[in-house]
Image 1 (cartoon, rainbow, N blue to C red):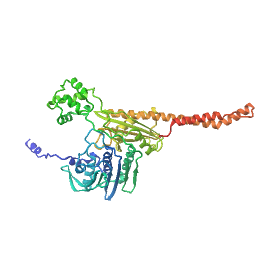
Image 2: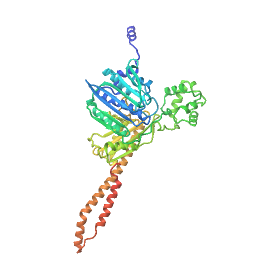
Image 3: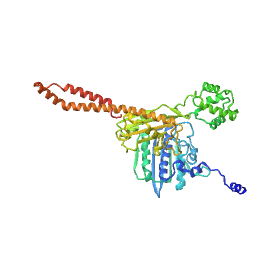
Image 4: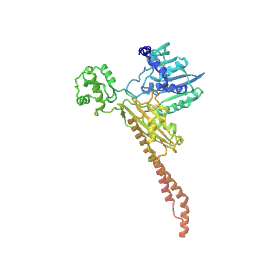
Amino acid sequence: MSRGLTRVSREKFQSISAADFFYRNREIAGFDNPVRATYTIIRELVENSLDACEQYSIMPDVRVKLIDDGNSIYRIKVEDNGIGVPYEQVPYAFGQILFGSKYTLRQSRGIFGLGGKMAVLYGQITSHSTVKALSSTGGFEKYFYELSINVQENKPIIRKKEVTPNPGRWRGTIIEFSFEGDFVRAKPKIVEYFRQTAILMPYANIIYISPDGVLYRFDRITEVMPKPAEEVKPHPFGVDIEMVHRMINASRSTTLMDFLANNFHRVGVATAMNFLKSIKMSPDLNPKTMDSKDLVKLVSRMKDYGEFQPPDAQCLSPVGTDLLKAGIIREFSPEYVAVTQRRASAYAGYPFVIEAAIAYGGRVPITPADEMLVLRFANKIPLLYDLHSDVAMKVIKRINWQRYKLDVKTMPIAFFIHICATKVPYKTVGKEYIADRPEVEYEIEWALKTCARELKTHMGKKERAYIAQRRLTVFERYMPLLAQFSTELAGKDKPPDYEKVLKRLQAHAREVEQRSAVKAE
């Protein structure tokens, strides 16, 4: 027994930094191999650039260049016209894991303050590369940093910094570093990522230059942008004991009623008073004096109280049906596209909105019988991996498409599903597929069914137009023969005037064809 205790006492206990943890477990963030890492680095950096523009209503101009330096080492350079990074924050924005501006309750592409820094860290550990960052917020100065990450302490190491004049008042950020990658095998995913990003963001200019010298250009086709998401307070349904405890410590409220009314989303004085009355807690109780029993009671009853108003969508920035339709038409030129946006819903106190579309015909390809063309997006990010693990695929397979006279196995059909939320229910840190939350599943299903009904109506109109045209063709072919035969049978010299009948049939066929609206405008 004493020998066993001695062995236990020899175990080494230590703590590691966040950077060290992700250095040892980089596969959970999408950096498990050179192919996936090449795609993930481009995606993470472009996401940061787009967020830096959209959150401040700036029309995005993003340029990406990937250069082959040989021996599987690639150098990436990303430039944007976003808000820029303040001078004193640049080292931490690019050199400290889990540091960022995404830890608020509003829709944004990033959720951990992790992706861009993980890309920099991956470059450092695979090619011993430093990151070069040039930024300006539009003032009279621009500032350059060369950085690396102290992995053991999760701190930036400043190798070089300089401040230079900015006479043109340029605003934005340029970031450059090297990493080990595999462009050849990652190329299809990279191109598809840019293509799908352009579908969902027809108001962005995106330029990508690949190592093989090919320039991919996606020009904006509209000057309209979605409204930026606003930061909101936590909703009572989306908090836990630790969060409420932190909120109490940070609050200046001296009564429980004021604390609830001032710190929670869509909770006013009357709602707070009614809630406290229902759980028999005093409105005048100082929240800082509550013991553990009172705190547990308060939080548990919050989740069961049915009179709280649901979260609203002011913290969300959906694309909108017009912009989504414009992006789909530019890319696929479909014969018809049905688009819908569901009303805001919520899961666990987190608001979300589902947007969906079904495109038919045009350049939409016919897929193999065992496949479907499904384009998924989360907070405007294309999701390219793990399609069959996603809740969207589960819903699509469950719907009886024959009810809508659609054969998804033989018809040229593409599905588009976009979820925007303050907290997207990803299944993994890699952010590639959505968990099957019942609330999200329900909204996706009804969004797709709404589009399917609209497409069914179009297909019905198209079929009626075809029947009317075929009927007209038959009459135009056989009416002269019938007129001649009936004239001879009646012993007349002059055939009957059948032109009026044909004109009525032609007018009817044109009217039916116009109503069918066979082209998506």
